Image (cartoon, rainbow, N blue to C red; front, side, top):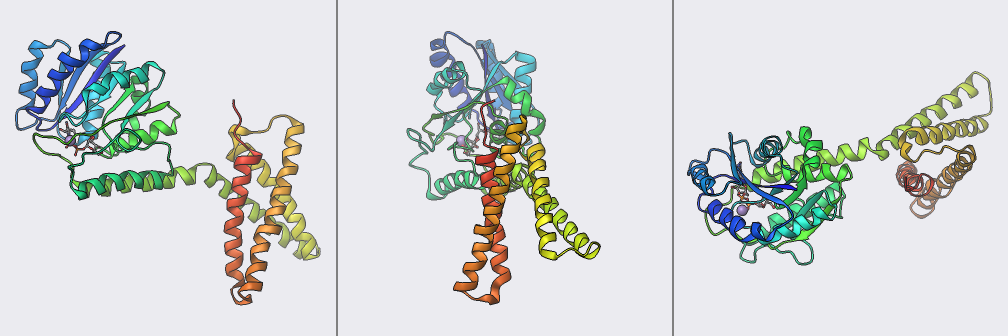
Length: 376
Ligand code: GDD
Ligand code: MN
């Protein structure tokens, strides 16, 4: 396959020459089954990085450069990946720092994962066999470790250990699929937002442990304060969107509709038809649960929708049983406990807590029992 290693540079004179030389002379000759190329993505570095690369282009025909304006690391990658695909015919692309923090010896291992069928391979510093530099100051260490934990806990995605790292390999299809959504976060946060979309869309992701080496020349371009603010902005909004627009949000909407239905039926039966309020409430509940069941089946969990009539009826019975169990044992149970253990004064609080726990119970039962994911 045609592989393009993209190296973003901003004032990396010296570093980029060293990295290119190692790749060309030591690494590429060991890779027989791929056509290896390098693309430097420079943002008009004032130190003359581009001139250094252009000189090397006379020596190495598989080396190219793409120069543009400086809009941050993410913007440089999006621009360079577009160039690599359109102008160089790239099928696989690498992200790699210019400052030798990423060990070029890992390149063949990443490619092996691609050959095995993975779409997106990330170098990870935070799992067995990976590491961050021991000579990093405590601030930089904390920053990196906490940054990653923050991402995992706010997005509630634990399978991936290193979200922020910048040593990766990906198939061009992955970039083409996500490209249009990669414009909002153009700095270092790009790494997290890109990976999150890749996970969302079900691409196959592999992790390769890497040792991150501190640079010896030049300095880091990360502005920690801006980065952390930008990162928080992204993970918090992404998390809210994913959770509320996903099945849980739909489940809440469906439940809200059920609640309104039950309330309307109760009032109409009592006030227009003079029916006893308890009987009216039960009738309302039966209709509300019916509506909840069908809306959840057709909308919230539509990918697991029931098609056969027998299964539809059987699952509806399960649904009624689950709903009744939840209301009787969980919601009412919590009110009962509060009333007896703490006192009547806070009865409405028990109702709120009981309803909260009930929602979690219901959602869990629906998601993992009634509409359990089946192989398609
Ligand atoms: N073209 C371009 N434009 N290149 C940039 C820019 C930019 O605005 N900002 C940084 N770079 C280049 C640098 O020249 C370097 O080659 C690479 O991107 C990484 O930048 P560093 O400044 O060396 O970042 P770091 O070592 O502090 O950060 C590392 O860890 C981060 C957090 O885990 C990198 O691996 C990042 O990719 C990673 O997100
Ligand atoms: Mn660096």
